[in-house]
Length: 341
Image 1 (cartoon, rainbow, N blue to C red):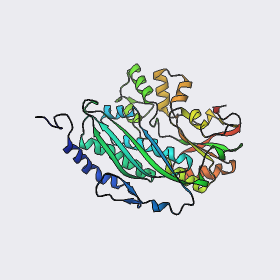
Image 2 (cartoon, one colour):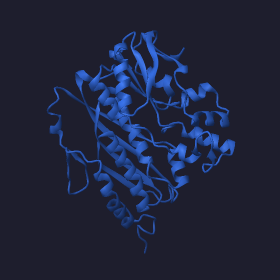
Image 3 (spheres, rainbow, N blue to C red):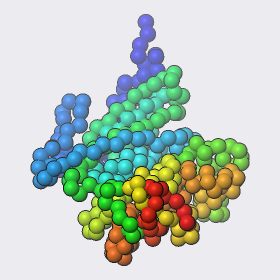
Image 4 (cartoon, rainbow, N blue to C red):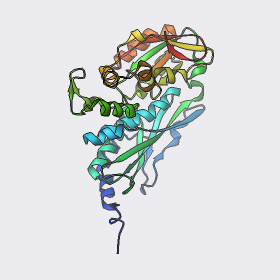
């Protein structure tokens, strides 16, 4: 006779993981969350949307790419969930939407309850930082398809925006100003190139690098900054025209998505100094500037396009909230591209 356990799936471990993560998930709860005793689905009270004149529901899904491989290599799993939330909810906020709730999915070679609880704890913390609720998820054990120490995670979130308050390219005007909102580091894009550089240069994740002031591994696992509450507050306070979440494709690629066909964003590279980690990666990997530009955020995790007369109050508000920001460029006649001077 054989069994599910003999095939590599431990149901008891899965149940223990659920028990361990419950208190962590509770930290992300919103008043609109409704308990479902069966646990098969997450419930959210949609009557919260009755105050909207024409609510538009928004949705986004994403993962964290090969950054999970560094978390596994360093056996540090409590922040990778924050990265997941950042990648998902900050796509929602680009159109001005408030993230409402999120679900996650973890696939692993072997359920280690404490490790799964750490991962989900990070997701819950990210949701708390974003102001949304983690209302459900799934953990799947895939023995044979993944190694015992391997896992991957993905998530999806739903948000809402008032139709006539939706932000985007249609609002952008000539003479507007582009603001840069600082990233916390590499965030969660470009890690295939990061790992390639580490391998080629023979770098160790445990190496203390003077330029970074900590180990390379600590720097590369720095969680993604979550911008949703800052961006929502900024849009409530001033006339924001558009946002751009700077992920894979870099500043030029992502900012171009928020521009109308007849306008360009002219960016000033001298307006900031990218964090040291990008110089480390470019130097050790001998990566050309064009590839750095197209792969990494280079220190700008979100961009905001605002009227010129809103620049000072916008920068003051972001400073008050502890988010470094600066004038990155301007909107000029063109063909719908973001580019450097």
